[in-house]
Image (cartoon, rainbow, N blue to C red):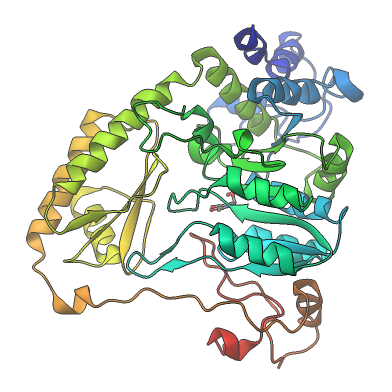
Length: 447
Ligand SMILES: Cc1ncc(COP(=O)(O)O)c(C=O)c1O
């Protein structure tokens, strides 16, 4: 029953209806379905339309609304808003919506740049939730419950709490416990699950799960969950979903009006369609291909562990393989993998390198990567200089002079401030190195 509903495609149906009458196009976009290059397939231009007959219907009959509702039913949430500006736009909207409840928001130290941008735009003041930094890996750990409890009990006028799980490198926090702590204080919980949409398909107790617990924020009590479907479900780049999980704190209208503030009035139909078709595929297959993929990744990780001088990070996200070698920095490692073996990894830092598993991951890919890694490791002899390499340890956000919004606005006029006025957060991973309103000397970054 659920499967049948999840397979319905109101957006595709509207498009097909429209195209079936071979319409004379007297509307935007200017290309009117005619390609201006021979690179993109012709069909792509035909599908690239916006509000046309059948689509420009108001209210609940609108195919976009219907498609979103089917997605919501599939994921068992109150509503799923399609995003064509990535999870970034969903996070901006979520921060706007939090203004409903107060002026301050608990923000975990390792949030993505878009959350900091959201602070600037929404005017909310951050209460920083420090997250342990794992020096030996050069990455952030998970949210510590005792730190959150302290933070939440000391703050007042709290509008909400926003954390990221999984992190870019695949570290997952205990969302169930975190939501409990938040809700005991009547604080809504927003989870940036940009990297974790696939966790919904990681069933507790499944063989492929390294942990036997549920990880998906949708199942663990979060109130708003923002996902990048392009990162781990297979839709086109820049697509995501903001799930309004329940109506305890926010209504459909709260989120819709917040999203409208930051979204284009001409969302790409190609992107919307790509979200709908991704959900259709998930519904048809019940995401069963993930099970095979997750099992293969476990095998991959265990094979990598056997390689001398290689350490594999014990993160819990099955689609992220983060590793390091005693013999070579992550950056050199990644460079060599690409130069000599055409293996392009997701990213690298001084310590390690990150591989993102995608749908192409099969035995052939696995073996190629393992062989390439073995070859490189064999070539590099232990270099003392390499083993003492340091990660960039981020400073705690201590001295906060004014709100991110105020500092950003002052940055238009004043050049020599004692605090930062811009968001600096190299992507990836998008962790902030400076935040508007932070004292410059605290950050050890004098520009
Ligand atoms: C943790 C995290 N949140 C949010 C985003 C933004 O996602 P999107 O690229 O879909 O806008 C990213 C992007 O890499 C991210 O790493």
